Length: 592
Image (cartoon, rainbow, N blue to C red):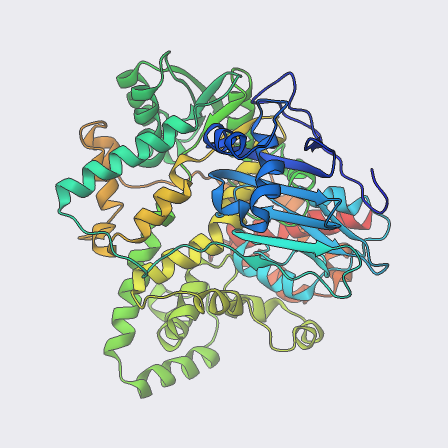
């Protein structure tokens, strides 16, 4: 605590268990840091800073940050290799400096209050504890949430409260007369420099880069392991861990009671091949007991139902380890999602149509009746709207939890007026302004890296793991590896309808073909069955509740029609209904 400044920290000790407590100061106490994450190259930076005359009193990676700030100022973030969200207070410069890692692995929220105070935290619930934080819901955040299933950066569910975007810093001198403006210090360098080489050279380089990225993430003074789903990404990480780790690797998997959702046999095959200390826990397919826990865990509406098994696998891992490696990021970086193929096919179809046909399709889609119970050939509304839309609008509808048509059907006229024409598509258009390539596959990868990866995937894992005091490290998101992959032509990532082509070829010596070339499955739960069975009454009560009505977003009759479509089996609306259930749970918690 200093005049006008207060920093606090709650530590999960990973490196330098005895002396790395925070807040941590420099030699004379003029610079202090609070920090969440890991700087993997801290040992090399420590040696460099020692040679430059800095004195260290701990062996933690945290202390590197204060001396790096003294030495390099705002550019210190360029030196860090790792995942981080930190705040530095410099007494001499009377400046607060906030920073978030390049890919958004670690979270950082902030708000400028009406009385001029700047508050920040790793979690939104910490800011909510401040009596000066206005908690009015941002209508644009609601529109974005219903489209994406999460509120993408930089917005939060509360107006005036923001997430510092990945790859950004924020400098706030004492007494600054205006709102702080984040500064971007890094972006994925798609289209800037192409990596050259034949297939053999690229495969060797990819293996070596993943191996090194895994190895540097094994630095810890606590037990360490890995998530093993049986998919390509997590299996690749475990294969590399087994090569560079001394003792047997600790691995864990979550199974499901239904074969459609279960991948434990594939995970076991990898565990057997590398003789890991493998543990499996089967989740009851009727285990929806975490439903209410998710609201407090994620602090704002969050509609990825795989948050429940993610919570369980973190719970399982924490019984044996404090640090776990995951395979997150492979789908975005190496074009693994099946939707990329669907989007490319849609774009090719649109390109073959004359402009007047696309305009007619768009108009027809607007007025074509909504016929959820009709035979499939007569349910042409969505296809017409897709063919008539621009590529970004088409991709948004492809990834949306509730597509644009459905959101407009649900909204009250008053709420549409409150949005003033704003749509979630503007999030994607804003990001594409910084992209330096016209390659269509790269475009969708880039948008996912800017939205889905930090907003959904990394958020889901961070909150679920931190709830169990488990640190999750993500070797495929090492920024050096990301930069190298950004220079690989898209033809090496998706080829002959297969995503992650380069990674799969590179892993052929390490993993069996049934792991590499099987059909991808999601980490999902049986929502459709839950909503027509054990969760039916709860869902009906939530969708028609007073808190949903009083929020002023939706027409009750339209909500009831959506629910009826699902319950009668006319359409699978489970993802849309789950997002509404999570929103209602959040609104109920807000109402007290």
